[in-house]
Length: 380
Image (tube, rainbow, N blue to C red; front, side, top):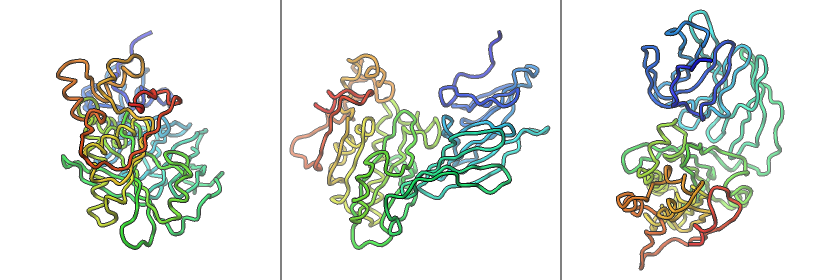
């Protein structure tokens, strides 16, 4: 038994994909290996049987503005290739990488339209099965074999007539100048300001991916759309949409960047003339509940209503807990020291409720069924 000379900073909790005598991993940080420096997010192949100093080969380095950001369901191996999903401005594309005598040859396969997620559901000897699902597209399974046309294997029935709706990707500019993408599902034709629900998550490196009325507000969005409403999903920092760095940029005492990104999306919807503050509702659950609660306390003038589900709202109490509660301090900020408490208090929603301020109408939902957040936070 011998140690593998690879760094510990790998994405997907170190998930690896085996391919022949090699395995493929994704680097979470810029790394120098065998004298060569690789950017964060690069896919590399490691051959333990090769001579030391010749074990590393680059499989794929994402061009600027693109990200292989879903190793848990977007990176697999077939008998002939490694398949992965690339993200550019929330639009997904499938690629195949094949080993050649001269290195790895990477080729683009198929892409999804805006507002449609792509995950690799399964793989066999020479093909992959994709699961594609969007705000307006029922989930379907697609068989993809390099060099052949995709074949739809199975699809769900639609539950809404979406001919009057359109799904788009927009970009807002956050407080520090960072560009933040967001999905927008809206009526194709509308008169005057459009009522819109803005949601997000922005924690633990989780992607904000579209689903077909199954996550978030689920099927309650069906009547919302039928009555002319719109829906926005913000890919704020703290999530994983732009790789590990996007997550790391908004953890600990930098958590307010998530809130600033979310507020920027709401401001963009107003500044574009699409809607007005009194017509904006927000929704978030768990860590997303923290996101919208902080937006409510920081910019109460920007929202008309808020649904805060099973939230984390009192960040000063996290360090007093144990287990998952204590572990949240790395994500949201550690208040166990006087300096840390002062920093966290500056953005903890519960501590920033102020008298004589007109807040949006807020409904806070508590639950004992969230294994991440106890009901006590919502009951504050």
